[in-house]
Length: 138
Image 1 (spheres, rainbow, N blue to C red):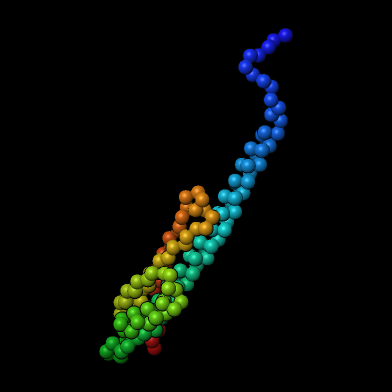
Image 2 (cartoon, rainbow, N blue to C red):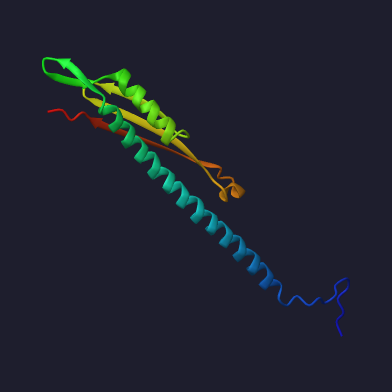
């Protein structure tokens, strides 16, 4: 009879099952977090794009006579209108406005702060949308 010194036989049946269950639980949690946060981030991205369109159209609607029968965007009126709309509808977003004759370009930036993916070090996603609207005169 061969005897092993210092080792005892321990029943290890089922130990792999425990590790598999723990690994699958962790992967499912990560996948759930990715689906939840990615879905909400996609919604945030669409809202930023919609805000940029709306603010650009708001600015382009502020026209004034430019001489010679032409019209141009009144920059101060456009900035005031965009400020008012942005403060009511999208106070969490930052925006910039550039007016050139008959075009208004708005850049909107926003951040989605993750809820579940923070656990793995993904804290936020930043989004930017640039939209340009042209005055419709005629």
